Length: 197
Image (cartoon, rainbow, N blue to C red; front, side, top):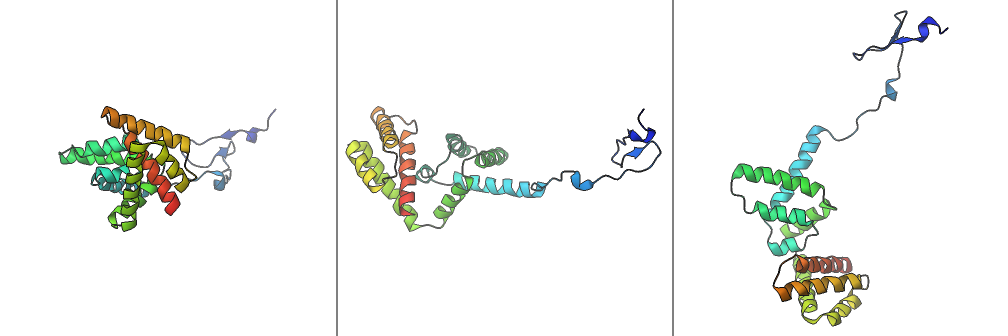
């Protein structure tokens, strides 16, 4: 049979286990996994920072928002925030925007773009206008300008770009706004930033 002291009487209130003879059994506390994540206060500070980014985004113009690579969910939330007038409702909506920003592919890129707006960067404005000109020419003239842009930016996905141009032109012809013109602009702006970084 098993020795009497082989069996442990487990203590469910956090103290060390003892055997049937009443002797404490040492346990290695290093074996217990320790929580090493951010503290609650740090998480709270991070969320406030995201809400501040969201608040700043609600103050941007539509043209500035067009330059940001953000999800349609975030864009719609920003536009909805502009229609909210009641303070408490706006505060809750900014919390919602903060949660969306945290789930974006690259929230730090959003912060850098906003910092560029705030600094009044002439270079940022120049690239913005350059992307606008490429976009407008592509919608007007089509493949010839798309090929010209490919010579300027050989790393561009020419087939994807042609699809973006075709979809944007369809929006213009049908006088609709399904976001295709904005998608074309964002793609062009991203490629310009890569070339001129």
